[in-house]
Image (cartoon, rainbow, N blue to C red; front, side, top):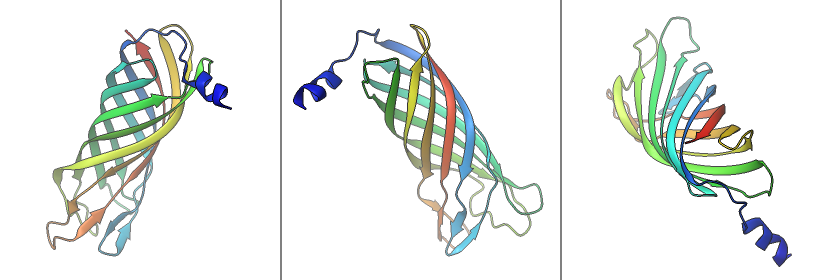
Length: 183
């Protein structure tokens, strides 16, 4: 058993260095909850781009993401979010070109809510602390290119309603597919 775990810790020789990545997928938001009231928002396209450094098993990156989710009610209102995150990844060594990973990130989310009749807009154009956790699988398709698919739970914190100072909760479950290119 000890030999098995020791073998997992040995990383095959791979080039450490900088990389860039891009991903697209589905942004699946939770309901927006304000003091017991909740209203829904539709799923949307989620985009993410990053530049980082691979340390042969651990990675760090700076990432920018965007998604805009329409309200489920009739009308044209929407809530959009730009995320600016510092992420850390750990690639689990499988001894093959397919490697699962786990990740965590901290940063900021800039949220803008369109004003729509009947939908309270407790924030209009504000930036909040945000965090995310995720996991996925990367598949190396060449010496420099890896495709991946993953899940990320993204949550801005500290959102307050400007009219009554009540707490507002919102989150997004993002399922993404992308490509990472080593430079």
